[in-house]
Image (cartoon, rainbow, N blue to C red):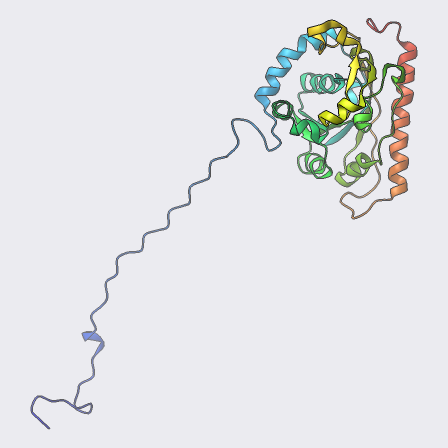
Amino acid sequence: MAAGEETKATRKPTTTAEIVPLHLPPVAEAEPEPELDDPRIGDVDEWGRSERAREFVRKMYDPMYKHWFRAEWEGFDKIPTEGGALLVANHAGAIPSDAPTIMHGIERDLGRPVYGLADQFFKAAPVIGTLWARGGGVVAHPDNTYRLLRDQQQLVLVFPEGAKGPAKTYGERYRLRRFGRGGFVEIAMRAGVPIVPIAVVGAEESMPILFKIPSLAKAFGAPYFPVTANMALGPLAALHFPAKFKLRVLDPIKFDVEPDQARYSRSRIMDESEAIRQQIQEALFDMLRQRRSVWFG
């Protein structure tokens, strides 16, 4: 073996003392991820409602509510002060004045926001759709209604007559149309909230329809195209007549069923829907019998 050469047998094993430690830079602690900014503008909630916009609308609408329509409530204390509830009312007027009157009265005197359900047509309309959403308008869809009632415990206003209500002519006033297939009853059952019926007198005369033009409604993609008595006012055709508003809140209706069931009795739903329609209809006839004047109540 040549000098200076080592074999495996003669090579000394390396001891732990001879191992050179590897110095690594200290691991930096992970910084917390920054919170994402809320993409919503200002106080606009997930439904598009803005409390600042509602406050502005309340200030602007209050004189009309108090001095033009002179809204008068009966049974206002039956509206729940907390928890979700589905407010169900009759609907009328070429440009309905009942929805803003109900929403304004409850928000002003009860201090609770009210979300009003309406057709997709209003949501899709340029400018009007945005203003409608800022004021508390929501597309009438079962999922939207359920979330508002069950998850968020809000007050939700619905008109089961749909577009058939405000499309009535003056000769058909205060005669309720069918309440659809009772979808509003099923949603209330599923969400576990009461239904609060409201009978409204005054909206029919605030903007009465003389007749309708179906061809123009089809051309504009609108539910109906009315010719109203208010058009005689010319540039002020969109102004409602100062009919006296009376609103009667009926007893809340609670359903003795478990919420969140997969299915509910279809016959029970239809029976409850028709019973509610009949209650509101009878209340309207009673209020009309007591009324002495369209303009003074």
